[in-house]
Image 1: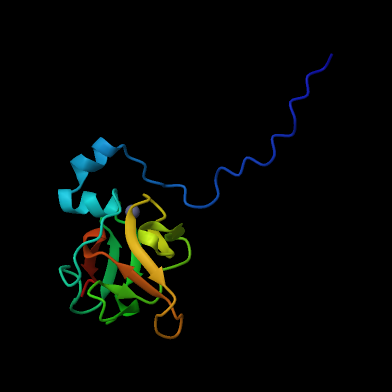
Image 2: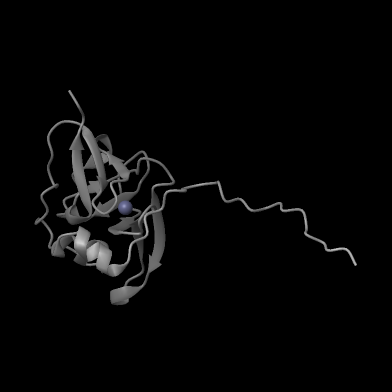
Length: 149
Ligand SMILES: [Zn+2]
């Protein structure tokens, strides 16, 4: 009786974000400050107007404070008046993941870093042109890297 080993097709292992960062809770605790851990890994929210990245100088890139992934170019940042850094578009479709969030009796859309799963904030459909989206992000979830001169 011959064995049927199949065709081996459809593994698809090489596609997409192949460099996901997956650490244990203890590893994240060792890597992040307590403030960043509370936001990125426990979905906390920093107080409005408390963030260090509300206003930045020049142009550069906002990156994930957990894994360093590039998330938002500085030219997508706008002044939303919300008290949190706000962006109208992510660097590209693949860097942010969206999840329904019905906590606190609200229906919102949580945004996380696609590479490490870190909590960034929420996205709301009340942003400016051209996207109409408002990515509302905790300063503690991101870092700012000015462009080289
Ligand atoms: Zn990340």
